[in-house]
Image (cartoon, rainbow, N blue to C red; front, side):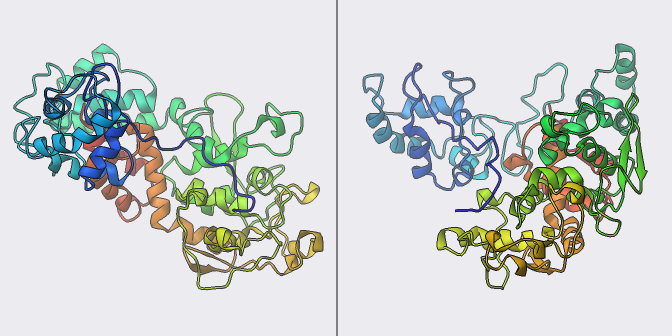
Length: 478
């Protein structure tokens, strides 16, 4: 049981079926379990992400690895096999093909699955480039053997500018030498990152902010106000886009002691200001996206102990979802049930030992409270009565983040912004936008190098990090 946690994310990882090894018409549900029982070291088994492409191109068509398994699967037995017969025959079939090299790249099938690479793709091999990868490429346009500068440049123009370069510009790019193409890639990225498509109202940066802000038009104030205008989330989108552009320190998304005004027309402009209508949090107590009026209205609302507020901050900016048992780091301090929610029960305490200390630094900021909405109030907890809990007035402002003591929300935000979790979550957001998916096993080394460089090498500047991202194989190999 978790008190007042937000709803689970609307997606959940899906475990696909290995299948169809026995008949061209029916997938085999026992396939994943059978493969993982036989080869538990397979990377996809450990991560619970095995899918149909382990043995198929587009089901029911089998890839070369799937064909090998099919040939070894109960040869001579009448088809179609029942699920029971399939499950019984699969271990022997896998044992028969374990050391074979279905794709001819010099690596055995079982070794490839253990390494997280594809035993049906000669270009997917443990440790990177395979001995036959480039020799077997016959693609007339793209260099599918490695990083293709033209492919990356054209993709960049679509992803960041929202349009393909015209033919004349393409021909000019093709005429450049390697250094010239690399320079063109850099210049195109700089230009596109200033485009309306990327940073304008409803552009890429605004779309990236959706899950963090969780807009609800019914209670929006300002432009396009809803029937119950409580707060204007345009301020949040503006602050987010501003901190992620213009060579600014991206940590300001959690640390900014200022507001940002966005223009009504195009091109979209952002202006840093000290005050903004409706924003009640005083200077010195502002922490970027964590202290906007909208953030408190949509998350804290009328709650005394703002657990949902802390959980959303943890998820949105540090990539850790307590509802999925992520980031559970209990401090060396007793858990106190200040609001009588039963959180110390064994079934609840495992999460609340982390969640509640995360919440305390948010407890001095009002949610929906008329003229006090989003205001910082040191005496806020003393304004609640016993109906909110026998010890509600004892809720401290000091808490813990990653097990580290933090005196208030200013300290919470500082620890968060300087953490590895923030770097990983930020870089992962952009990776998903540009690469199109979470890092695959064969991409983890590039992803780790990118987020580790985000602070010391890129100075937390998104633009500098993206210059490195568009040069990764994950982005530039067709």
